[in-house]
Length: 635
Image 1 (cartoon, rainbow, N blue to C red):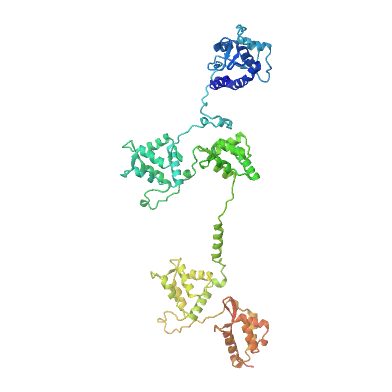
Image 2 (image 1 turned 90 degrees about the vertical axis):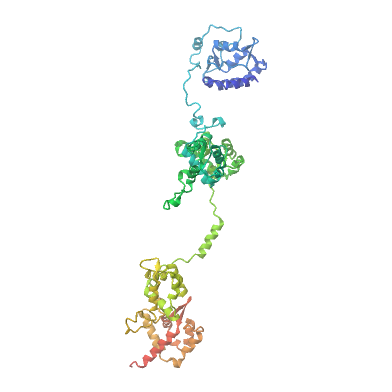
C-alpha cells in the first residue's frame, strides 16, 4: 500500500523534523479511511484537493508557497498526487510545518480551509507567511529551528535517563568497553580458580622444547582451549586478547609469547612458586578482589543512585510477598526459556515470566530489577530466585544420626573435683593400699613408655600405665596426681621415677645404707573413706553398741563362722541383710537398736562395686579387742 511506503520513508528523516513524525504517522494511518469516505480511491493516487482536505482535518498547517512546491514536485498526469513517492520534502529543511494547539484547536473554518485549498486552479500566490501568522496569532509554530549541538546523542541510552525501558533491540545495547590489563588478569584468575584449571596443561604441548615461548597463533589456541575467547565460557574480545599478547610478548622475538610467565602470573591465585627457597613465606589465600569480582555487564550496585536502589528493594518486597502469599514457583517459568541451563534469560523473557505468574510491576521497577540482575549473558534468574524464594536450609539426615552417635559415644561430662579428689595424701594412700594388697610394682607398668630412658613419660602414657594397674582413680584424682608429679622442666610430661619411689615406700624406705639404724615401717592399708566418717554423736553411739555386743567372746558365740558362710568369695565383706541375719542367728540383734545398727554399718562399711557392704573381719576384731580389754577394766 502507498501509506506503508510513506511511513517507511518518514522514519528515516532528519532529526530536525523528528518531533512531527508521530503526528504525520497518525495522519497517514487514517488516510485509507478518508479516501473511502470520499470514494476517490485509486490505488496509490488521490486527488490534490482531497489531499488538502486531509491536511486540514488533521490540523496540519502548511505554507502556501511550500505546499505549492510539494504538489508540483510530484505531480503525476496533472491531476493526482503519488503518495508512494511523496516525501513531503522532509529530506530538506525547506518545508515549514505548523501544528495548531490541541486544546484551542477546532475544526477548520472556511477561512482556514481556503488557506490549504489544494485545487490546481485556485492557488493564490499573494499570501505570505506573515499573512498566516496574522490570521492565526499564537497558533502557528515555525518548525524551521536551528540545529543545536547534542553530543550525548548516540552515546547515552534513553533508558538510563528516563529510568525505564520498553524496547530491547540489540542496536540499543550499550557498547562493549574493553577492560584494562589488571582486570583481564583478575577475570582469568577467577575463571581458573572457579573451574580448578591448570594453565600448564593447555600450553605445554605447543612447546616441545620447553623453552617457555610459543607463537601468537598457538597462544590464541591455548586460550581457546582454556575456555577464554569470544565464543567460550569466558568472553574476551580481540583487543583484550591483543593486550595480553602485547604484555607477554617475547622482547627478542615479536612473533612469540612467553607463556610460562603468563602461567606463573595466573597460578598466583593458588600458590607462590619456589616456596622451597623461602620456607618461612606465608602463602595468602586468593584475594577478595578475585573472588568477589563481578561478571561483565553487571553494575556496581553500591554506585547506583539511592532512589533506584530503594525502588529495587521495594519491588523485591512486592515479589516476595506475592510468592509467599500465593505459593508461586517461579523457577519452572524461567527454566522454560533457559535452553542451555546457564542461569540467564533475556530481559523480555524475564518480564514475561513475571507477568505469567501475576506479578505486575511498573516500568521503573522492572528497570531497577534489570539493573541489579543483568549481566553480559542476560538476566541472572538464579541470583534473582535466591533472594526472592529463600529456601530453608535442609540439613542432611546423616548429620542427625552422626550427632546422636557422637553423643552416645562421648565421654561423660567431667564432674567438679571434691575435697578428697584434690587431697594428694588420700590419693597416695589409696594407691599404696592397692599396691600392698596386690603386691604391684608400678615402675614395671611405666618403664616401657620411656624408650629413650629420659625418666619421664607423657601424660597420656602415664594414664595408660596406671589404668593397667587398676587403681580405680577418677579423672579428677588422675589430674591431681599428674599436676603433683609433673616434670619441672617439661610440664607436659610426668616424672614417673619419682612417683614409683614414693609408692615403693609402702614396702621399704630408700637409702637405708646411709642410715642403718632406722627401722622401716610397712604401710598398713585402711578402708576408711568419706562414707565411713563419724561425727562425735555417732562415735559415741558406736562405742555403746560395741560394748553391748562384746559381752560374750567369739569362742562362745561362733559369729565368725556364720559370716564366712555368707562370704562365698572370701573377700571379707557381706551385705547389710546378711550381716543382720547373722546377728539374729546368734541372738545379738536384740542388744542394739535400729539407729545403733545403722551407725555400726556406717562405721564398718565398705564400697564394693555399686553397693555398700560391711567388713565383718574388722567388726569381729573390734569385738575381740573390746572383750580382751574389758576383763582388765576395774569395776
